Length: 418
Image: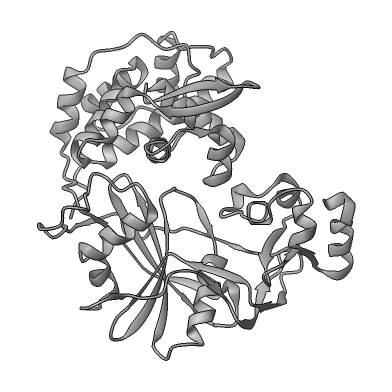
């Protein structure tokens, strides 16, 4: 498509390129072709040339060197405990399979009222709707100058809108962990409803993963500037008891039996939270490698790394469809763990980790010394642990960061409720 329409040259000459949905549809469904919720999802030609794409009408998109994404920044690691009303039978803290149910749990438990500081909240507008007309500026990564963009009846989607006495809060909800997000998901709804109500319009991001609801409130300091958003407040909540003590981890380490190393590459996946997130994403359906990569905040390499990490722990299984295309699903162990309560689930993940000698020996040194050993010591333990297909020293060093990353996740569980 870039070759056919000479898009790079047109952007170089004119600063931007407008492409129609009918042009995109020659190759693929436009809704899928232009859906890049995270910077890492951008196609290679976009990433290499620092490009992004935004919708500007029902049938047109604009491509340029837009600064379209914003990094997540967590300012609070504490977790506030809330609870669902005891008479509710259709909502369960242990079964939150979708963004919509996560929002319903957040509303029913009172965490949204607490976070928004509104005594009473009413669910109002949601779903897909037209944007009407508005103009804005967005920063150009090439020139560092603002680019003017005009939007006319583009389609927007709001996961939930909650109105209180003082404000209207517009929620974007996600179940996948990511390092950044597409600002458009907050900005377009904000512009639409700022022109329709006189109350303060508050853009809210809700991320639900592994029993924790993370709420982020943003503010656009200049309503006409896409890149003017700042984080106003961040807070974590849980409907379940999240208290885990050091003694709990020690007990798991003492009772866990070592396994023989599997014939699966030793993990190169530093964030254990994202290993858990893979299990969550597979808890309702099996997914192909392409689906994992397209739908969530991974590139193809990360998809391989994190699915292999979950397979290494016996949480996920891989099979092949026709054409040798890999498809992933939860193992029986993964299914059992994902049905446990928050505390028991975390301890079951710790057990899965500590069944492997590298992690057990490194954790044992932590218990003896009160701190994790240095990288050289971890590499030495790895070299003595009969790991599958690790040959070079550089690979040992690179993958040693997974050991420290996963053990730091375990240690971070201690006393995280406040």
